[in-house]
Image (cartoon, rainbow, N blue to C red; front, side, top):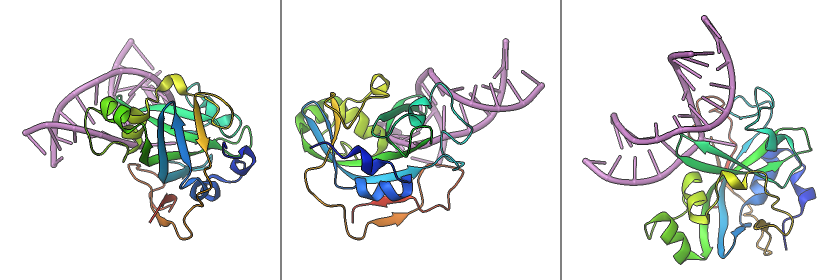
Length: 177
DNA sequence: GGAACGATCTGC
DNA sequence: CAGATCGTTCCC
């Protein structure tokens, strides 16, 4: 079943660890979420820190939708919108463990290992692009967040977020041990 | 109108 | 360890 949208309405740092071990599905490709980062509206590292713009508008929409953006002019990164509509928070998906559709992931990535162990890599592996910005993950659309009953880890690894210059001391990165 | 800067990845 | 690469944002 798809992940319960209501469970995404809390604060991003609380929701983020609950997304660990959930499945991200696009077509035949399935990956288990093993690393995430939380970004909130009052967080200087967040795209929403300076208010709503054309790019980040999806983050101000209802929870359970996909916020995709281009990183370093090259890569696509994917987030799951959290909080109430108008809030402006999301959880960045940083790493997946491939579960199904591995051949397709290999083909998209052009290599056989290191398929989804990074935010840009996992989007390429699953075939997620800017065209998927705004997609509803909790409905019956082509991209979905699925709960297969695997619980999140009891004690996730917690640390600072990666690749940012502001908010570096906030321990909002969560990983499956 | 322009410049600076990335929530990154890869190959050297 | 540095280059790739370009849209977004903000300032003049």
